[in-house]
Image 1 (tube, protein in one colour):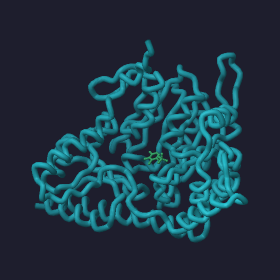
Image 2 (cartoon, rainbow, N blue to C red):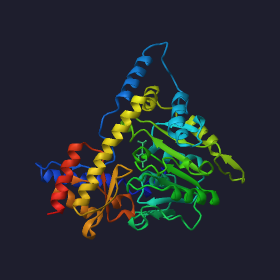
Image 3 (tube, protein in one colour):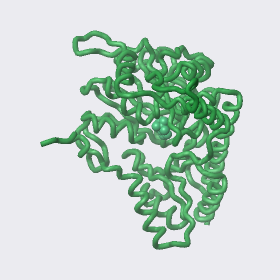
Amino acid sequence: MATINDNYLKLKAGYLFPEIARRVNAFAEANPSASIIRLGIGDVTEPLPAACRTAMIKAVEEMGDRATFKGYGPEQGYAWLREKIATHDFQARGCEVDASEIFISDGSKCDTGNILDIFGDDNTIAVTDPVYPVYVDTNVMAGHTGVANDRGEYEGLVYLPITADNNFTATIPSQPVDLIYLCFPNNPTGSTASREHLQAWVDYARANGSILFFDAAYEAFITDPVIPHSIYEIEGARECAIEFRSFSKNAGFTGTRCALTVVPKTLTAKAMDGSNVELWKLWNRRQSTKFNGVSYIVQRGAEAVYSPEGQSQTRALVNFYMENARIIREQLTAAGLAVYGGVNAPYVWIKTPDGLSSWDFFDKLLHTCHVVGTPGSGFGAAGEGYFRISAFNSRENVEAAMKRITQTFTG
Ligand SMILES: *Cc1c(COP(=O)(O)O)cnc(C)c1O
């Protein structure tokens, strides 16, 4: 008899977004004339930059000609894309990242999950709370945790609370942990980490032989010039950090799929026999075996992000969402709500008023304003009492939603 991976049974069965959908559908059925505005899910709304579309159309044409047709590409990604990434995203910011240390993939979601393949099962794992659920669920699936309690916390994981009390930057743990997931600018809180905070993490990781998983999916949304975009801007990070980046949010590639992971060749971890093994070699082996690369067409689309037109078009896209974020922040503040984030990230994190729980505030916004957001408690126990509003939407929807909220809360 075939058996299953029992760890899947420990998962809190995709509770957050199905529960949001259930409540929204019930409300919509009972109130068919209500026009509901969804500021909940973190997906982009605006079309692909013209430079990317043009490059992909050209690539499709090349695929139609025997002389320029492409079959399997390099598993690591085409060198012309990796070179551009190394130059523009890293070397231009003073980071020592070589093109050979970059692995192109079909998404950071996959990479942040797949990276566990090359690590042992007995590592102690730390995540922030609230957190991007992928980091937690992939560790549950891999058998790295026990069962969840009724707050949704899994036995065996180290949770590092990030709340207004610590300015949304986790306190460096007092116990040794081996693998640490950091996401800055942060989803869901919209917070960022200063150079000093990141240096403290790098120093901790080097002192303890830990590895940092640094998710920089939102780096393009940083507006404050003193905030680092890459963990490799921090001294010593090449000895302790893997960085994940994606074209999903800066270039609207959520449905097109292209991302990258940086594994420095200077990064090692311990084998059972006590020897130090290069993680680059393991990740290269893993990708070459289990992955066959991103399509040529999509890699040409991603390359176009680095052309002068692509740079100005992606900048305009990011600025468009950040103007939404500014409007959301201003209007919610005017409505008397305490808001965080939204300055260097496309997410605004609200402290729920009057001690309402995250779900009570969700219901209140849905029923009185017909606006959908995401309850903070869905991202972790320490997210209780908070609420996420996404700036990924049309200007029209953002303005209409904010008008309804200010009318409700300012009476
Ligand atoms: C959107 C997002 C990503 C990007 O994931 P892709 O699979 O590349 O689309 C990565 N990390 C976080 C925290 C995100 O919110």
